[in-house]
Length: 143
Image 1 (cartoon, one colour):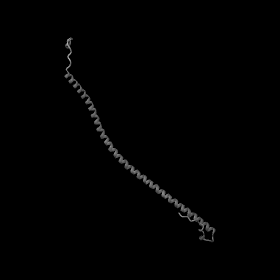
Image 2 (cartoon, rainbow, N blue to C red):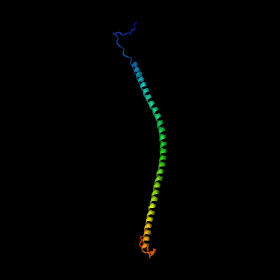
Image 3 (tube, helix red, strand yellow):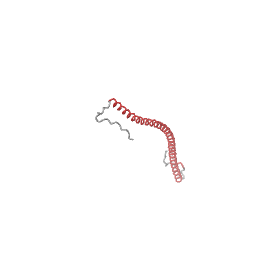
Image 4 (cartoon, rainbow, N blue to C red):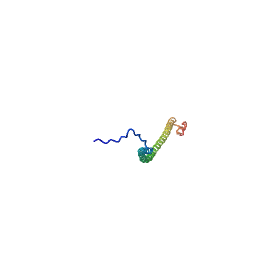
């Protein structure tokens, strides 16, 4: 059996114009459905982004706290190394002071050695004059 055919309007019938009120209602319903479909998608995207932002803000806060902690630790470590450097510099200065003292002592000993050599030469040359005349020609040096 064949399906019943839909009634065909007679060709001499004039098409009726749509009712303006029905057209406006249909247009409003269509626009509302488009807006709700678009709005729910946009709202969903915005809600997802807001959730991500809040989650990321918490992670950033945690990283910030860790960074502050590590910065404090780095400052403490830097202070320790600065003390080591200062102690080393002080040691080098003391070594320089000891070296300077040793050079001055060596110079004084060389002067004494020269004086003693001159005294001995003078004593051999003036066997009869004694030690009193031995130091007359010696230059006087002050340290």
